[in-house]
Image (cartoon, rainbow, N blue to C red; front, side, top):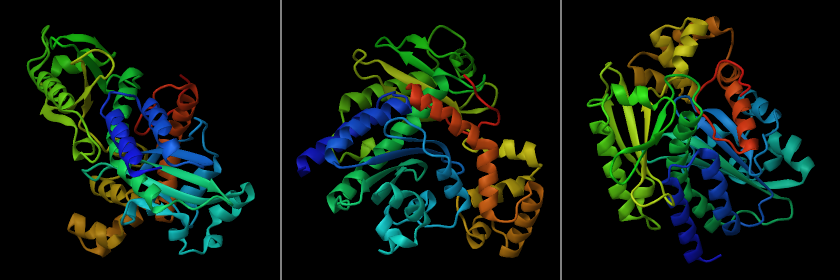
Length: 387
């Protein structure tokens, strides 16, 4: 596949990312773009992550099937190569099995126990990270034994589409949360027509709109109006291959509402739905939604929550000490208290406990949604979902 075809593919994914598509639809359409550009892939796995904790909120194959449960045991409990957090920390935000093991793939437990018995050999995981540095997920391509390794051109292509996918997944999760909200504080979506009037909205939108500055009337509140106009102007400018706007910050404004709560509004054009129609996505400015859950479950102090957040993001003791302006000894003391409260002995066990308590229900819920072609939802979930 030539360079022109790859450039068109990147531009197509960038265009998809700018639409107000739910995450499952974005992934399905992006996958159809990538498949002919990276042929001979025998397995494709998509993961979404909570950017606040880097813990998974969904994991499913390119066919929409949930990944095997043993993958999560391996991810959070096993010491091994080729973990998602290794790819996140890698220089290129991309990792192949050969690079991870320095060519000694038999050292990898995942390869020995799961891949080799199923005839699989080549793996590359690429991180979906936006230009602000926040990670929204990853996608892993696998080829069978006997197929060629991934070429440098293919790896470059995957890295090129990854920032666009990050933007799209971020938007898509908001759309999913808004279409089928978990509760009254869930994000909302408002569809704005060419005349800048509200055409439709999701269930929680009225509450958010009424609390925005200038809200409560028939007209669109001022912040929403500004975001809608900016998104429309951005859409008219178009996207081209290599245009960093597709991977950069989207049309966003942060504002304090009439209740004193910080709210984030995002604008996204609605392609194929009539000229100049846009979606305004509204969410609370609270990326660390898991922390209040941990506070309630384990009675962590504010400082212990900060330390836990950094541990979940893979920070070392020295890095945590530097970021919090305390000594490494103080960090170790906090860790001891955290471990005692949560009932674990290691950082890995802490991550596994947080996953099982807060995120495993969400992964199960999203697996059902992916299989049914329904929008994915984001963030932690602390109770079973049957909807």
